Image (cartoon, rainbow, N blue to C red; front, top):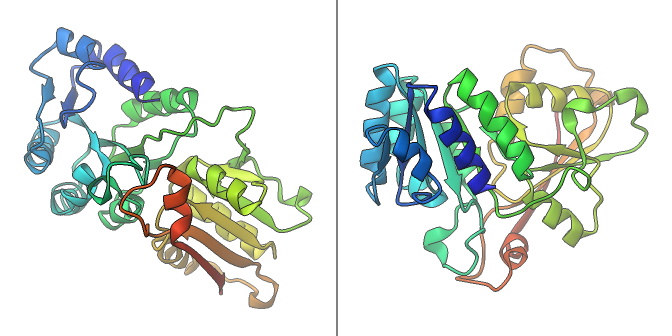
Length: 290
């Protein structure tokens, strides 16, 4: 997935002079074609992630579109102040790409774990978040992102759930066909969790945006119970649902319930298998949306 994404960026690099690719000592070899096109616009910033974010926001104001790539906790948690102020508050545009979300680096210890990245990006006012399930989907998403050029978070995964195995996208739901409670997986780690918990996912989610929130609210208003599974912290979801729900009148007695199952943290310093981290500290919460 990583190689495919960086190749797509490199292929677009020559034609689009607004693109700057900034690497946190990651993906340097895979980005060699972009570096050959313009070494001024393809920069390996090393491990100075906070400086890299500050520089990126500056060139964004100057009408460039920076693409920032590093390991998840280094680019999200370590640089949260820059993300919150330089991009969220100042409304600068960039594409932040991370590798190693949640517990992808399962053997490298807590310095490389980050199940809170989505929550932090939402709090930094990023409302365009992508969690591709496979490399084909990732390549398609990158093409669309480079056309839109807004403040976007793109979460790469070590999981590769092909299009035949991946559940139908939630945007394709037909409420008239729904007879029972439904299970929705956000991001590819949800597939691992669902299998472990012996739940069959009915639908998948690859993007977190306003459209998704409206879809979830619409399902609940139709009296359908939803269980959402994710391999990362979902503490942001209720706030987004509440914000979008204020403008709608709903019949409370007929609303469905929302159950959240998600990984909040891990009890292990390291583990042989990622699923051991994902399931070591699972949260199960059930809500009635009014």
